[in-house]
Amino acid sequence: MSQHQIELLVKSRTPLIVIETDEENQALSMITGMRAVLQRPIFKWSLTEGFERLDQPMAAQKLFSKPTDALGHIKSVRVSGVYVLADFHPFIDDPLHVRLLKDIALNFERLGHTLILISHAFEIPVELRKLSAKLEMSLPNKIELEQIVREEARQWTQQSGQRVQTDNQTLGLLVSNLTGLSHMDARRLARNAIYDDGAITHSDIPSVTQAKYELLSDDGNLNFEYDTAKFSDVAGFARLKTWLSERKAFFTGDAQVAHMPAPKGVLLLGVQGCGKSLAAKAVAGVWQAPLLRLDFGSLYNKYYGETEKNIRHALKTAEVMSPCVLWLDEIEKGIVSGGDDSGPAKRVLATLLTWMAEKKAPVFLVATANDITALPPELVRKGRFDEIFFVDLPTAEVRFSIFDIHLKRQKQSPELFDFARLVEISEGFSGAEIEQSVISAYYSAHAQGVPFSQELLMNELRKTRPLSIVMSEQIASLRHWAKDRTVPCD
Image (cartoon, rainbow, N blue to C red):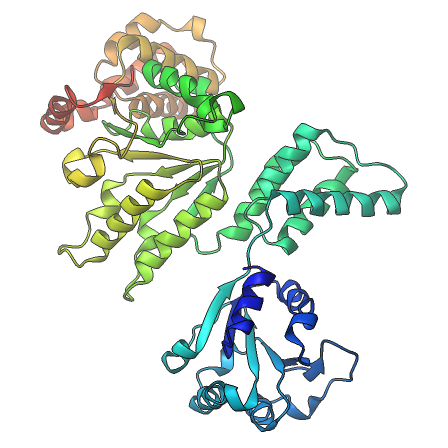
């Protein structure tokens, strides 16, 4: 929403204008800036202050502080004016208030009153919809955000007598990370970054990103992964690593490849416990982007339409956080619940597919799945994802690396272990099963009061029945499906 849009609505003689925003002062500033265009007195009403004049000094009139009295007063005034009603949303459920608003709107030709209702959220009653228009405050663009940062820097300089230390690259990075925030929130985060140490540095960016996420996601549908895994911690995945490294410049917006489309996403299909989730975290780590995990379980709501609203809000938040990686973990569990075509799962799928087809923001989708048969064909058809990778049980070489990683995490010296024997006995084990065997052996050593040893680890491996044996038929079927339809990660 811009000041120009409000002017157009006023000139088109729209009697009721609803502005949804948390920035009441910003909206009021835009309205008072239109006094020359409006050529009418401008009043603001609030429950605490009653009426006050905005276009010229005048003491507040608390006589009409009650909503019914305020609307009755406006209806009785014969001099046309603009009336801004602040936070009127709690009173819109009263039929008397709805009728008074309608009376004022229907008598616009005679009274000439324009009502502007400002609230953080406002549901227009059915009776008033054809008499009203709804706007949302537009977010500041990059030029405005940079101006906000520079204004905060000037204020700090005036108070401290020192210049804010930064460089153009870091300043640009801060501005990019403030994109999607309101004027008020962007100013507060910029102030926090500057006033902390009088400088804008790369160390400020993670805290700004985290604070931005916390401001945007207040419903629990998205989880911000603060500690994305280093890609060096992921054993194997050679082809996936190569694929990602080849596309990093296209995702990060390198100017030399700006004419090419950004990568859309990948589907990681495979055996449970073989590192799909770790690989999803590692994508964000190698691309140095925020990682958001969508919790499908929290999306579903018993009230009609709320589930779709939840996923739209989550996807919108991901776009605002862009460039980012959006992780849809075990996606098959989120879109196959619900039996008929009218079920919420179908509507969630439709919303997700539409977003995937139309999104412009650099949001890279990483979907993980264990059961390809549970996924609808329209989701896995060519073009939805850039590639479908199959995560199989780790090879002997990868199992060697997995043992090395987890032994080091337990502060063990790898040279004290016979890796060839460990790799041999762990044939058919997933990475998660190997990790758990190492942890169990460490617990056993502690309980017995003996040093961690090769023998204890081998005992734990022998006691474990890996998933490849317990669910051999299902895994064989999954491998058969993936053989000619997917790209191996290794």
